[in-house]
Image (cartoon, rainbow, N blue to C red; front, side):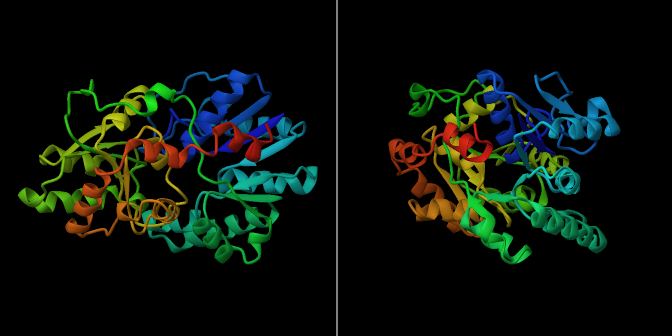
Length: 360
């Protein structure tokens, strides 16, 4: 029995972690692997994408209630062979439980929750509470998983000596993309026939920098000569981004789109763009784009995503707030052969990642 705990789960919420868990849950259900996934489900923030629906072997707190949720975790973890937690708050409960049950758990460190929280709320007490909770979970975890050297270094600052029990899960190839679909010529888009565009598909929070980037592009006015930005995603910055897009000829806001629509948008985009300000472990949208033959251009502050692209495509890195740098990165991205993009991400398969993280 495998137990997965994650605050986010697509399609109820957006973000890279939500996508990761979504693909794993889908894989386990298709393969008939015994597991349970525990997730918050829908909530009252702007992350929620749609109403809850029944997914086999997934327990949503928004559906069963808080106390039943915790009770189900206790019962299930007693017979678990592997426990992988993706979120500190749930990890706090699992870590405490492990002291009494002696059940080991692994923690996937996607980023420092205290810093991301402070970026949004500017609440010092809330940050300290989350910092202590994070330290407690990391300290008790049997193994810590990260996606990049960048995040491993960040982790070491939070918990000196943590690198001794840290394993880097390298970038992997997402499933459900056929060989015929990988090198797909740019077709006319079924989604409102947008034409040429640069896609930003992110969780819309202060950390990911989408709001600031939209403000910057909007301030350029007629000086902005690149294809328009198409924004998809959800998060607390959603309404402000939507308001900017209404009065901008350079920004199109689509909000949440379905998985199949996003697939089309990524495939047909001239490029995807990550304007991340900080704390990026990797950026799954980079992998999703490259394996479709679509280039990704990223900010120099995109952490693990910057390091990943810099090793092979250093000219795809740009400086935030510098239009010439952004323009040059985009123009360079249009010169790269799609096969080179696909080949760069195709070595480490999704099934390999699942075995390394979950043991199946």
